[in-house]
Each structure stands twice: as C-alpha cells, then as structure tokens.
Image 1 (cartoon, rainbow, N blue to C red):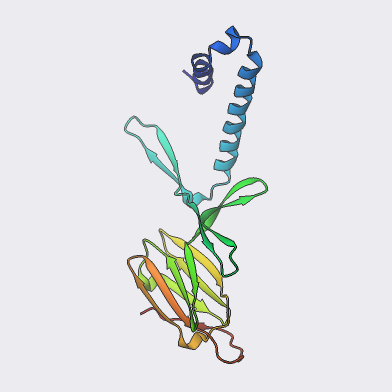
Image 2 (cartoon, helix red, strand yellow):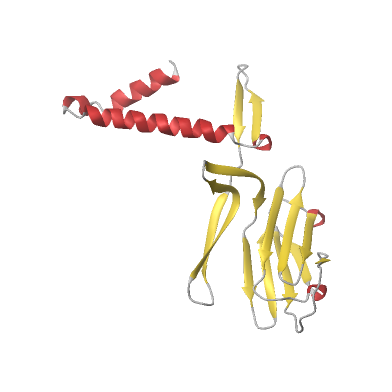
Length: 197
C-alpha cells in the first residue's frame, strides 16, 4: 500500500461520519491540511545541513534516513526591571521560510549580574574542557566548540563592562562557569583569551 493509499484509508477510517452527516467540506479541509503538513516536512528536510543527515542500511536492504539531533528551547527569567527576559537556545531558528537548522548549537546560557562581578554559566554537554574556546572583551564573551560530533557557538553581551584580564573560569560535568570582575575604570581592551581551569 502506498503512502497515498494509507492516507486515504486513514481519512476514511478516522472520519467516516463526515460524508454521512454532510460534512464533505471538512474532509476536504483535513485533506488539504495533511498535504500542507507533508509539503512543509519535505521543505524542512530539504534545508537540513548534511551533517544532520545520517543514512543506515537495514537488514532487508532498504536505506533509512535519520535526521537530527534538533534542539530548541528557551529560558525565562525576570530582569532587574521586572520584565521577563526570554532567551532561546539550540540549533533551530525561525526564518521567513520556516524553521532553519543552524550548523552549530547555541548553548543554554545564564548571565548573573552581582555587585562586583558577572557570572556566565553555559551548558556544554558532550565536550572536553580542551575543546572549549573562550574569548572575552570588556562587554562580551564568546563561547565556541568545534569538534567532530558537537558544535556550539554563543556570543554573550555582558550587562556591564568587565576586567577581562582577571576573568576566572571552570568546567565540570558539562557546565562552564566564567566569573568576570566588573571594570573599575574605563580603560579600553581589545579582548583576551580566557584559560579554563
């Protein structure tokens, strides 16, 4: 039975009362919705980067395509002004043509602003400390990982100017923490690499 035969059989079994009750238009609407969803899925899969497509041969000789992993999430916290701040993470982004899969995953990052310092906490599961590249300036922090299995990238805009030369960081159990003391003067810096302890 082909996919079209399956769809027709499913529609007839699922909604047999439409025709009996005079709701032929509803059957057409559901059919159109199903076609639109199939077209959107085909369009989405055509835009998936090649590193997210894996093929494997099944015992019966057929080739099965697997897509992913696809990650999308968001975190919400209340800012200092009392308004909610929504931060997205993952490798799926919205575009005018529908969902867009990025080559690298944006990690979940939390920025904590205290009196004397700024703490940046990032979740980077599945990587080794040596694979993480950190680069900071007085008002931003860049986190990058590029290995064979995982790619992460996030540029964090900091809420205050920091002294990047006094930055400290650590990585344990997939969680990176960077502590950045706030700058006391207005000296300009072009940025510095940050070693992970």
